[in-house]
View 1 (cartoon, rainbow, N blue to C red):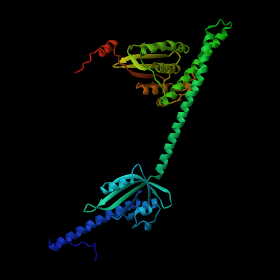
View 2 (tube, helix red, strand yellow):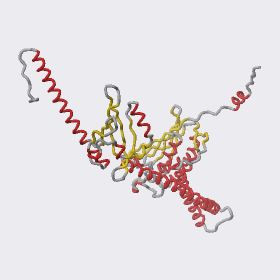
View 3 (cartoon, rainbow, N blue to C red):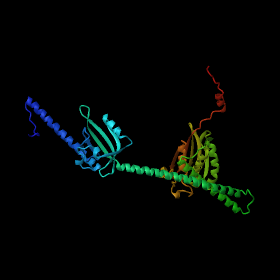
Length: 418
């Protein structure tokens, strides 16, 4: 008959009730057909392989993506168990038994499984098994959803190999720099020592004053080169986490006073004044040699990127339980686009802005890395054409217990109960 025909309603009789139920059934069927159409369209076009097996484990349904993934036509999979044609070679990061236990317990299981395709190649899938239960609470069907991650796994392996290769190369680079730095430092120390002896005429007078000046130039150049070598060496050690720090308590203002005095001589050659506002008297705990070196780089930067007649202000103040050291210049500043990159290794600003062309471009990098290692606050602010301020924030070192207090603790009587 015509199952599309609706029955017109008149008076409410038993027949009318039956007609109403018939119409409702047709409406429900139309909705169900629409939903089935949407579901079947989704299954036919979804980019994951889906198959449904019955209680015996034989395939009732397989979508086109699944057939394409495994390389089998529909006729060769319907009514057959996936294990008969789709070889499970291994389960990654889990045991295949785990999936069976999960399914038996009515749980969904997800894992990465390597299968064998029809053409013999491997297929790596992120597989999810979903059990479907009947009214008796028994497994009626099993839905398997497989996402092909074969290419993803290949890329993952390539990335791991590249990472290992990069780490090996970086380690070799660090070892090379360390060895070369030691090889260069030994003769440089000899050159510095002998040139200093000659410049100061320790072994007797030198008749030609030009030789004395030449000796001073040799000493100055050698010290500059040694400073660069030490910088590269410390950088390589920090990168390799092999830098041995000798932490001591000391007053940072005392350290900065010495640097202000020594750096002022070089700064005067460029008409730049270095001033100190060193109010802090508290001690900090860190490696004094490294901090001396880092402050030296920061002050040198403030001089080299300053204008003739400019000024560098070095301050050390106590703010709460912190010592804040700021190195501020009124020089050329850093362009806004370069500010995020100035602590990158070997980064150099526009050479037209640099009054001196030497330098490895590692001073700020070392300062930031060292600060991070020592939990020291590090910040750079700058306005192009106005100047730059580098700020380091140190926690005040805790006071060591006095010897008297220590004696009191050790001399406390020992009480022994009988």
